[in-house]
Image (cartoon, rainbow, N blue to C red; front, side):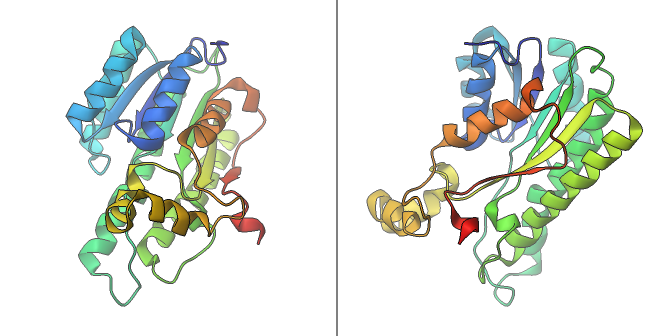
Length: 256
């Protein structure tokens, strides 16, 4: 523990598993207090319990504005402030523009984009009250699919690309308004988290690792902590001159 996030309070959506759960662990390790927010209550509580007194769970449906208001207020009530918002909740869907239904399209956008919008809207309004001493940071998990398209990723490409430019707009708004708040997006490729379970179930873990790993120049899937440490950096004051940036963690895919 090096106290890179000492004194900071973070709210992490999608904190019950995957990148969100890993980030919660690393941020607490670096001195933060963390509220784990997720719609999956049992798993979210289990993650928060592992964090001890530095962790707390709140149930959050990211598509609900009322849920967002309540989660942010509970964060402040529990730990006295909020300095970091990590929007990590999301779902994937592999369908072409012809195959996807309007209902599926709307669901992907509701969770992956509307949920980030609501977090930014209400998060910024609260974070700006608590940045006199410590800077604020909004971190939005997009995807390499928010930069590079795929034929069968119509809704996911659209939503994650929306997160990319929304993050830049939020960054410029905060800078123009004189808020001590930065906003950046993060763009991972295949990371070995539960979001890949549909492929794991279909092919088996070993074949899945090989099939997806072949698409990455480095030759393998990413590990959660390989994204998590970048999230710690963005949450910390070490990244105090970064805003409106996109952090690509893709094993070289975008270099091809």
